[in-house]
Picture 1 (cartoon, rainbow, N blue to C red):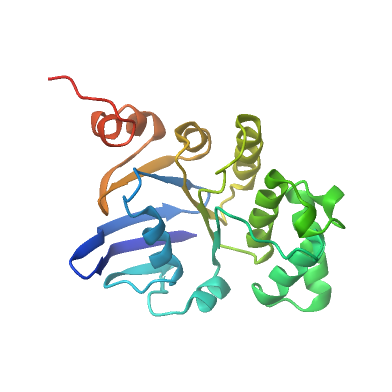
Picture 2 (cartoon, rainbow, N blue to C red):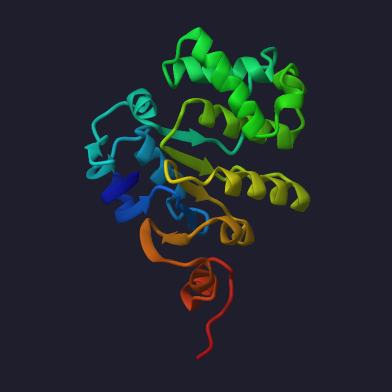
Amino acid sequence: MMLEVRGLAKAFGALTVIDDVSVTVSGGQALGVMGPNGAGKSTFFDLLTGITPADAGQVCLNGTDLSRLSTEARVRHGLVRAFQIPKPFATLTVREHLILAATAGAGLDRKAALREADNVLERTGLTGLAAQTGGSLRLLDRKRLELAKTLATRPRVILLDEISGGLTEGEVHALVDLIHSLKSPDLVILWIEHIAHALSATCDRIMMLHLGRKVIEDTPDKVTSDARVRELYLGAVPHA
């Protein structure tokens, strides 16, 4: 399993928001994506999913070029996104959400979708909440459901878009443990996050964006200790 992003670029008029970004992530790996507000992180994910068309570059999964495909077609190829603000259907149960994701996203028939939903419930620790409606869930469980819906599509790549936003410190640790447990050779994970320690605990590498360009891509320790990262993202002032 391999996701390859080659020379991705996007401008809105005179404003360049993603500027020649390339990165390769193999199955079993998690890549963190960080950067200050306005760095282009969400636009980067928009380009990967096809929500926004790229001006240049390619998005390839296992050698297949997805760049001209619709968002729905990319989902069918296994590229799925979990959003920062979950919006579950208020009256559907947790299990029904997963059945819907398995049917629409993975193209499974009803019987297979039921099996997949129950498997994902167990993997994400949501079995005890299977009959609870989406509108009644607390924030952490809505986040877990958002992640579970991506898993029910049988993904090859999961894009996590600041999924820990709004959680308490303890809830962030619980979510980190869940994401870490999902790592496997058949899955690529990309995670946009402002909480550096969450990325460090989960990701094999971190890529920092600034003004749409890749500043650094390295191990978590090297990225968080880099002078450019401390200056641009953490607010530290470099010594003369």
